[in-house]
Image (cartoon, rainbow, N blue to C red; front, side, top):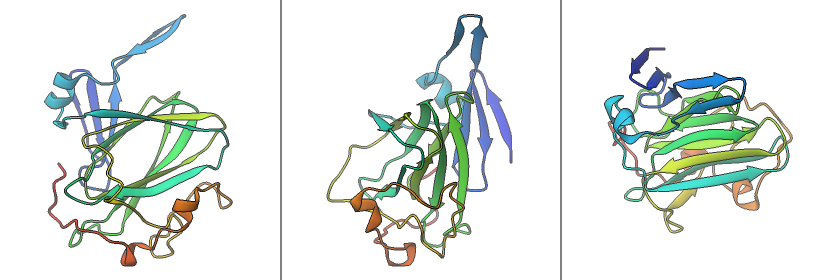
Length: 196
């Protein structure tokens, strides 16, 4: 993994092109801490030029709640910047860009209120997470609005992906139970795609 620091932002590359762990400077004392979780000029300087237009907030009451694997088709595809403000998640990203050297490969990262890491998920990747603690809250920025018509998903337990989730008995929505495996999922992403 390659690490690069620019001002307030530290970027840690993963094995998936453009999927980055993002760390911001944290200032702490006996009262707690302060961090600029997103400062547009500093993120642009660090190579994250996206125009985020919406913040989403997810609450999961129980550990083992699994949401995903989600994505939207082009032209309504979304880049996401994900962070946890309470609890912890195992966050998973899957490369679904046809022709990519890492097509069908995945990376998993723990995001928590204590490590204060964020995960950048570009267009062309499916995203999901499993909560590791009760009462987990996730906030994520997106650079495109939700499109019900172009909303798609991949089955979390797809055997071809062989994702090493931290729980085998998970809490799922009815929608997430019905997603197809990657090979049968509708997908209009090609490599090189619109990511970084």
